Image 1 (cartoon, rainbow, N blue to C red):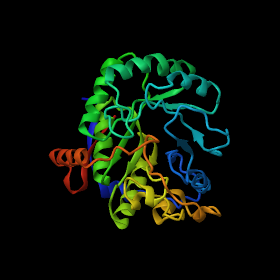
Image 2: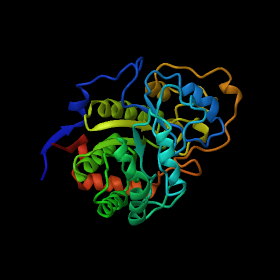
Image 3: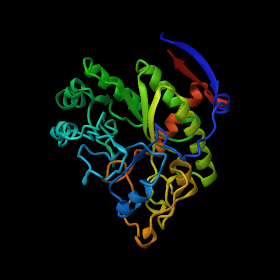
Image 4: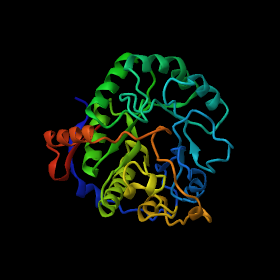
Length: 321
């Protein structure tokens, strides 16, 4: 057994840090650009005013167009599934600022917004199109599975089919409470040889504004303090009226104005002029097509697992090297 067990309460760690005012960049904090929202173009201009963000991804392996699309944010391409995998290498070669690449999006599931790949096929595609980038110094992120128990099993099988592959960090998705997020992160970190994590989708879905704000604040403090979490991105960069994770998880209201949650994550910014003149019309999804990974079925399974692991009362176990 590697490392030593350290019992932490959600309160003891969090009291050691204070929430940043977001007046300056937060090295880990990123932006998700779903790319399938009617108001996406003008809303992106609002998000780019944020002094807190440092990086962005948009579920594609294509270079931003125009190249200035994301301003000063570091763009991280993702090989969403096997389609157009041959485009990944030219994208990386054409942008000297690209340092990391994300693997497949929720390949353990085949619902809307999920790539639906078997672990063995995903490993084949990885070896042919993603692995060669390691020799060029690019850091490679594993496939980002759902936060369900089945997601972890899929990832274990992928590693079994890709034993010689270079996997520098593990992106993960989680929707639910802070306690659930913390225990899930600890579980994945320990189960996969203490590889560092990127939380590339997370939110408290379909909850009250008060609960969502509290969950975000607690999560940001915790994630910023952890050495083994390198980056994170909240799934909320859209308007409340097109959100498929609940209106209170969105950075913007239906008129494109920055919500309290948006200011907490992005800093004290306001919507760009004209944002309220553009109406929403298409829902935000993690794939650019239909819906995110959130589903009542697997979330119930995760919560039951938390109880079974003895993680009640805000106490969880973290494995430290």
